Image 1 (cartoon, rainbow, N blue to C red):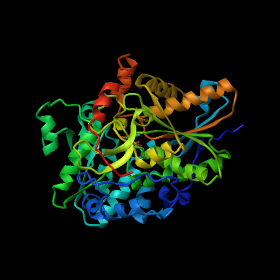
Image 2: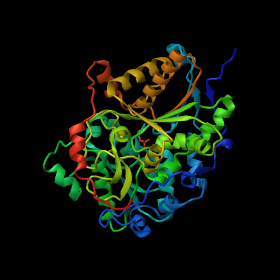
Image 3: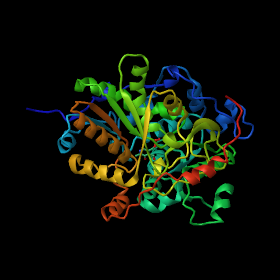
Image 4: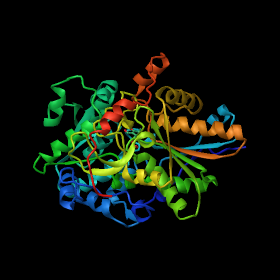
Length: 456
Ligand SMILES: Cc1ncc(COP(=O)(O)O)c(C=O)c1O
């Protein structure tokens, strides 16, 4: 009997609008506050940093927003991405569960990140911006933005978290191949970066610090650069919903509907992109799925962080938002999942988590690599260390289904491949990977630096 393994949508069935969850949020994700005045930000403040269209999308209540033609044209280079049924993994686990994964590693740079990078670069090019500054953790986001800027003739300046800069040198080479300029962060090139770099040239860096450097450079460029963020903000999550919108159609082809949806969370973009279109159905009472966000024990924002107002970056230049946070001064351990080393989380996800619409779980570095290897040996794909967190949870849910003798339909977002993360796999295979527990003391001291915001 022929069994379908890949559910492939024809190009003509690619969705032509993103889903904007602002239209359906059961609770408010909270206001965006100015980092100095702590008053709600004005559009002017945001437009100095971000393209105007991006700011308009952040406040839009339209349920669907059309994807511009030039963005669709670039999406077609790899979209629609395939939905796989992981039959060989199911067999290896001897589980009655059906396991599916949406494979975003088919994009030219190997992850979901171009879904928003291309949109942001398009809007910036339409508004006459010369280029973008940005941060990158593992280098996936930087590669995506470098590619997108190259397509739209924009300059691209990337601050790459130092620990990743050294762990993943080939990511830098990709970014430079597209024409981007890359610096290890903290760098001596910005005032804030220099304040840390001068004290410790080997400072491992963090996403919060790299964001500060990128924001500072854009803010002091006299309008030459805008700043681009690869996660956290509403429009970024929205651009990623092309993933879940495609997946909904692909599950129709498969004749199944997920009982549980899983994604790893750093700032929350791939998880949101995959899950929000399904959450829309859940909120409308049309279908029910459990939705699970998976994070590292070394940076357990949702499961251990406080739900409060905090700065988006370390230097307190980015807006203050309401989110689960470990404190903007918290510097996570140098785990290989560089893209999950962020002290905060997308406000939309935090509001949904707080409201009980989604669940969260933290998993350790060693067991995530064990899951990634098991997945590679069954399905062939070596996943990114970030994605391995989702794989761990998917395998654990499939094992629970085996124990219970239940045919659950489990779906996870395979946010990226790990072919530039081989140093991490090498360490794992040599038994040299470190397990990091929750750094309670460090978080406690970072909490002392939270802003004292009076807005409810
Ligand atoms: C492959 C991959 N997955 C997940 C993430 C986490 O980011 P987000 O939570 O925004 O999807 C990253 C970030 O760098 C990534 O590169």
